[in-house]
Image (cartoon, rainbow, N blue to C red):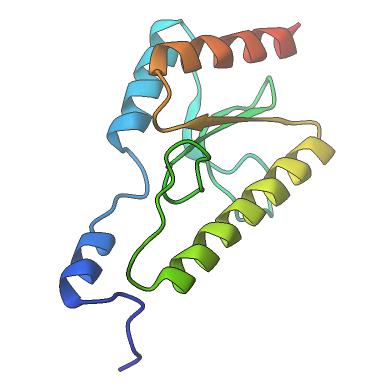
Length: 139
């Protein structure tokens, strides 16, 4: 069996239990956006052929919303440095940030707007920001 990236079996179990969608911050943001009367697709790929999934997609307006976790995406305000396997996690987070920038660039080239929301942001304020961008793009 290949060696685990986790520093211990307990850490591995905790990390494997992290949800990739329908997290509390995602549900709060979706609820706030829905309350504003906007409808969207959940956990969808904005561009065919691109293996990137947005948390919310507004196909008509060409807006993709990504709710980024502070640890996983290197929030400048809340990111903490891992004490175990520090190099692995630093490389992982930097890879995520590089992929995020690449995703935003590819979407922009295809005429889309990416909206990045940090998990710590107030969902109502973030929903207002999403609404303004979607409405502006709908004409």
